[in-house]
Image (cartoon, rainbow, N blue to C red; front, top):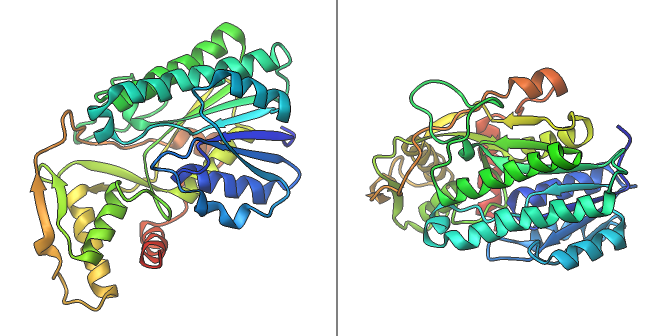
Length: 330
C-alpha cells in the first residue's frame, strides 16, 4: 500500500501514542502527522518535544467527544488514515467512574468512525481507520492457554467493557458501511513515558523514594509485557500492510507474575542505587484485591508474525534497562 498523505493520531500525547507519533514523524517525512489529544492528566506532551520542529508534525488540542470539531479537522487536513489510541485506560479509575469511560471510549470512538465515514464516503481506496484496543476485552485466562484473534469477548471491568463496545462499533462500520478498518488487541505495555499510576513506573518511583509498594491480593496475577516501541512498530506495519477488516493480537511473549515483577524491579534498583541486595523487599505491602481482577493475560501473536513478519524483538532485560534509565533521569 502506498504511503498515506495525512494521518490523524488520537491520543498522541499519551504513553503509547507518543511513541507511535515519533515513529510516524521520523519514518514518513512526506506524510502530515496530526496529533490530536485533549491533554488529560495521563497525557504528557513534553514526551514529544523532539518532534516539535519537524515540518510534518502538528499538535491539535481537541476532544474526540466533539463531533463537529472532528468533522472540521477532516476537512482541514484531508486525512486518509486514522490511528485511534485516545482512551481512558486505567481499570481502577473505570471502577470509580464508569460513565467517563463509556463517554470517551465508546462515544468518542463512534464520533471518529462517523467523521471518517462522512468525509470518505464511498471513496475508500487507500484509506484506513485503525483502532487500537486491549487484550482485556477477552476476559481472564486460567493457568494455560492464550488469547488470539478468535477468542470470545468476555470483559470483566468497566474499562474492558468500554473497549469491547468500541471494538464492536469499529467492526460494525466495516460490515455495514464498508469503512476500511483494521484492529489490534495488545497485551500490557511498558517502557519510557508511562504515567506513574501504572504498575511498573509506580513501583520504580516508590522503590527509589522508599515508599510502600502496593501489590494487589497475593501478587499471583499474570501479565504478558510488551515493550512499547515493539508495539509502535506493529502499529506501523498493521496500518500500512494489514488486511482490511482484520484483527491482530499483539503480545510480548513475556509472562510475569505481578509479585515476581516487583521482586525483579527491587533487585535491579537496589543494585543501581548501591543499596544492599533485597533491602527494598520490606516495602512490599499486600492490599485488598482489585474488584473483578483478571487472573492471567497471554497473547498468541502468530497471525501477525506469519502475515506481516512481526514479533516482539526487545528482550525484557533490554526493555527494562531503557525503562529504568528514563525514570531515573526524569
